[in-house]
Amino acid sequence: MCETLQALKEQLTDVENESTNTESGEVYEAAEPALLTMPVEIILKICSFLDAHFLKYTFSRVCSRFADILADDHLWKYWVHNKIGGCYPALPNLKIWDEVQIDWEDVCVEMEVEKKKWSNVKDSMRHIVVKDVHFASVDTVLLVNNGELCVSGGRDRGMALWNVLNIKPHDQSDNTIYSASWDNTVKAWDLECGFVCFQTFRCRMSALSVATTESIVMAGLYSKKVLSFDKRAGSDPVSSYKPHRGPVLSLNIYKSMVASISEDKTLAIWDRVAGKLLVHDVKITEKAYPVCTSWNQSAMYIGDSKGCLHLFHPEEYRHIKSLELWPEPPITKPSSKIIGCYQSAGNMIVCSDRGDIKFMYTCYPPKEYASVKTTTFDVTQLRYLNDVMVIGTCDSALEFWVPNERYNDL
Image (cartoon, rainbow, N blue to C red; front, side, top):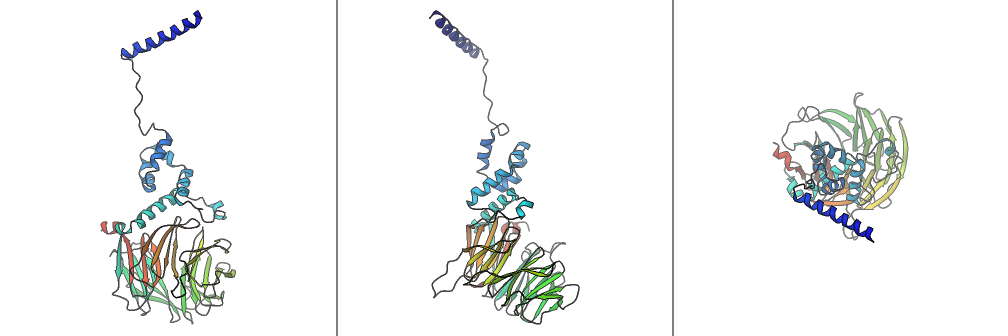
């Protein structure tokens, strides 16, 4: 017992000595909190409240510690999946993912930038409607030169060249465009020399679609054929093939492959290097005909005339899933036709002929985050390039959406 009391007395003496040292001025103060010494968990919590564009281009450049923290690809991957709440990429088991690594940082930044822009379209974009050029339906539009130039073609047999911001083209730009017509020709137009036709390719049948790559021009015909022209070999086709039992409505070139869709409701893939059909008679849907395609390394999407978006395997060219973006209305009302589909690494834009434009993440199923309504009905085509969006309509009109900052930079 005496030993216990002695030990307790010694502990009390130590406490008194510590109290005396404190009174004499020997005080140990805790370090003030600072970002450089702050735990990583707290920094990540702060980052969760900041937008991805700011994190990548500003926050990560403050110091090497922040750069090291944000260099973790798993962090950006977590933020992407937390944002979409779905499967990304839409087809995660593609062979391409064994060769190409997804840049999760760029995907996350793109998703947030696009969502911020289109969720607040009235403040971020300038909406322009033009009705004083064509006097018939504007059936096709094309954006070139980083979205600075737009070409429109109508049923009045006229074409118009639009300088969106009245800015001169860059030195390195798309100076040539191609048009397909019911007059049995495909024509090449020079945008730099007064919008003049400088080459004509003879199809001998109405051309409904056209696609180009390098020195090759390909035309889809009403006669169910696809013609291939070499720009250096004159006006006659160098080869042709017949992949469908109906008119060829659209062509889409990805690398050496050419995808064609037809009124017979099928998809065909042509290898232009090997010169042979890889697949044909691939059924897209039973109840509607295909209208537009969007094809990149991660997915192939086909929009149809009943408002459905069909996902195809981009390597095996088989149907995976279908999504009804616009439910089929009662029989007394017309269906919503998907007339335009654009996809990038993280985002997708889909437009119906009724003037509804949906903005979605490219997960599966696609997650919609914003929508825009056009001022005119009967939309014929949508194009999107470098933040500029344009549509053509049966009301002889074009509608543009241009970022406000482009005007501020003038």
